[in-house]
Image (spheres, rainbow, N blue to C red):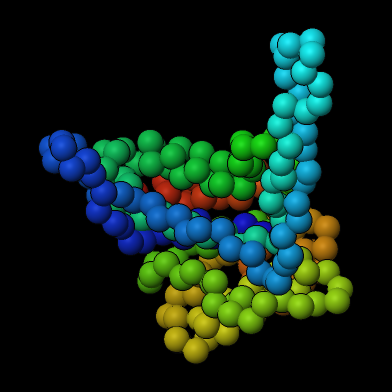
Length: 219
C-alpha cells in the first residue's frame, strides 16, 4: 500500500560545511511501517570458498538472515509552491512531481534482490492534492490489522475511512482531490467511490503534472 503525494509544507536541509548550498527541502518522506503483527523468519545459508585448499572441506561460512513479509504503509508529501520557487520553473516542477510520483509507486529496495526477489507492485496507490495542509494517514493503523481475510483489503478500508472521517471532523473547506489505483484485494476495500477517482498509474501521473501546471498559472 502506497499512498499520497500531497502538496504543502517544507523542511530545512543543507550541508553544515557549505552553508551557501543550503536549501529548503520541498519533500518529506515517512518511514514505511507494517500495518499488522508479524513474526520474523530466518533464512539459513551456507557459503563455500571456491579457492579453498584441497585439504579444507566443508562450508566457508554458515549463517542466517532475518526477514519478514508484511503489508506496508508509506507516505510522502511535496510542497508544490516551494518546489516551483526552488526550481524557478513551473514546467520543471511539474516534471519533477510526475517523476517522483512514478518512482514512489514502482521503485523497490535494491538490497538482497538475489535472495528474496522482492519485486512486488503496490496493490493500492493514491495521490491527494490538498490546499490546506499535508495529512499523513498513519493513524488508521494505531490498532494493528488482524483481519482473517485480506489484510490488504482491510488496510485500504481503514485508510479510506480515516481519510474521509478526518476531513469531515476537521471541517475541511476544500476536501482533498484524491486519485487512486487499486488491484487485487485492494479493489475490494469499502468506500473507495467516496475517497476519490480510480485511474491507472500513467493517468494519475498525468493528472498530477497538469495540476502543478495549473497551480503555477494561478500563482
